[in-house]
Length: 191
Image (cartoon, rainbow, N blue to C red; front, side, top):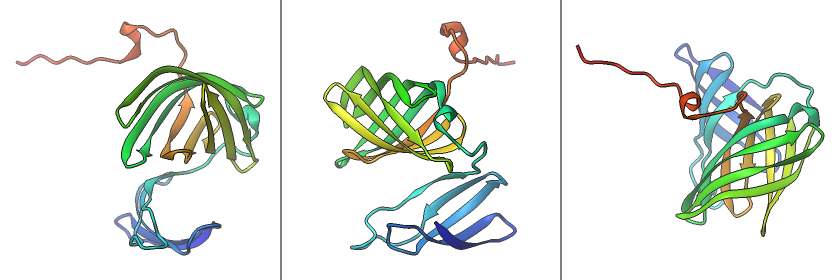
């Protein structure tokens, strides 16, 4: 990907990006959150050649060069997107062995079809620049995902198997977990 961008003092910016394999340029507006984070959206009108509209967070990549050991241990996964003409969401836990194998469990609501505690296993690869791929298999449901490393043990995931889902996987804090330890709570009392 190459391109040009400009930013004004308020933090609003625009960019024209040339991305291999897509209709170019891809025009974007963005707002600077910090030196390491932007919120962005595509500003191209939908047409016969521009089918979708993109939006999301752009973050600084750190910790490279990457390799399969850049993903190891337990990670929590969250994906959201579309399946056909409806929405699909998924949360779960994956365990990567740091040598290219992973397994885990997910809960999914795919257009109202709920599947809980679905186990999966698979493999993953990563290039030195942080671009990688994952192949996972649940009973009767093979998947191929593209992964992008933000930093070791934190990846963005794009799944285009039966719709379009995107999300993140990031390292899980050390357990064990319980009702008392899983969520911090606060209380306030009226005067």
